[in-house]
Length: 128
Image (cartoon, rainbow, N blue to C red; front, side, top):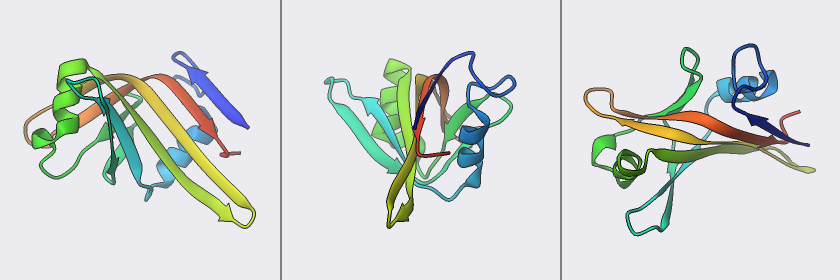
């Protein structure tokens, strides 16, 4: 089943459904952040340091030397990003599950630098 939630969506004041929130808060999953370079070419890289910011209902991505990264520069320039967090619930039978979050993004510098993605669109599958 594919779940698609638009801003103003599901779980009591959150753009995320309860099932999506549970998946995001399980932790330990690799994410892939997507940005667009100055040349218009998509850039997708794995990130291991991300979290759902409960207070802002955003996805915060951190990492080593984040401010020097291409993804940080891309977000600073475009103000947009997406992240996919996924895993395999089972390999037999094959059961992938994932959540994709697209939206407005901020590149916040300084100590504790981060990329903050404010969801405009959330799509998930295999979470139920």
